[in-house]
Image (tube, rainbow over all chains, first blue to last red; front, side, top):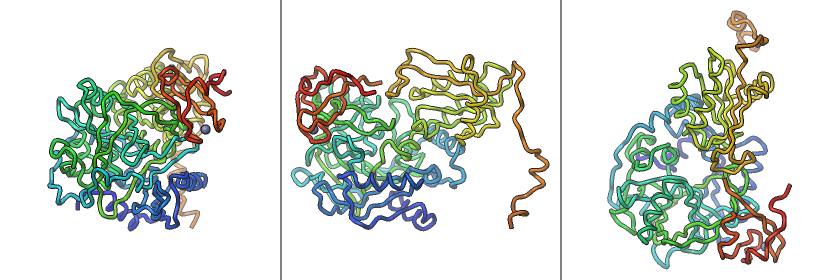
Length: 460
Length: 51
Ligand SMILES: [Zn+2]
């Protein structure tokens, strides 16, 4: 069975039923009700995959498409998506992610009549995006947004670029596509320079390994379908699109595919939109998507991300940790772990632990980290007895080991893509214990006693 | 990093913010609270951000 979203949810229901919440009661995603329910759960510390079986559509009528939210709001579920046991969801998973980034699996092309995503085909006047349960998430959001990966094809080299792009509903056959990330923008600009409309596809739901694979840190020119196959552990099945046929292949096992054209030189208003920083992205102009075809499975699921919340942050964390760890290891082999905490939105801060043998190493690693990942704004370096996946320990090191006069460095006038109070600055904090001045030793319970006293002997 | 300016919707008085590219783009803004379109000049506030 080829991997798809439905098969993943079936497995979760069977093997990890507490990880999934079925909501049967009708709910109105376009009236902020889905985000309200997810926020209530979040306030209770609960982040299950939430399947809304009876959502309303944009016309406030019953939608035929169940809405799946919060799938990525747990590292353990991301591990399961990649075929790993949940207990390997920390640095091990990130290292496996980095390993798969280096591999390629050729996609498999199949005919339209066998492709699940072609079970229903709508074109022209039959298209009405209002049939979908597109959520409006935060109070200042300008409208309802899809939040799933989009696909473009380079007009010169022919490779496919796949990455997350939000699209705002505008009219029954029109959206505004937030093409901000450099690869897609570069492809779009190539079409614009030729004054040609750019083919653009968004997929609203697929197996989570497909979606995670679309986040791999590949260079411009990489064929992302090949990389995504490495994450799925099987070839991505592709099928000709309705609009461009074999000249633009789409994922055959997606839930829903929206095909359209981005006309050159056309921009329309979109945003505010609650983004990854937990702030609203401002109103601005973005390219327009004229929708040409919509295809989907019978019983298709509509998938979304709760932007600016845990699942969104974890999606940023996993692809960067492994490659950053590997890069820092090359500089200093005694690096023991790297974590991009969700408190830094999974992108803006990294915690690095190191078995420090000499002074100055921590700051060298901090500089290297900030150069390695352009989104990073903060680098915190701690000793190897601090578990970087336990934030309380990292904060303990910050409070007890940092002398601000010498251990905090602010690098002025360096570019940051995302807006935070830092502006165009980056910060390195050396929270390791100093080796060159007398400093107290950290307390510990003797190893021999820990080995001798077993919890189960005393608590049973 | 994005530079922003705050505006107030002339109809519902709701406040939101825009990228500075919209200051002189000649495009009407759209209020996220009441969906009214309005000229930038009609929504400008004197201060740039709340504190
Ligand atoms: Zn208004």
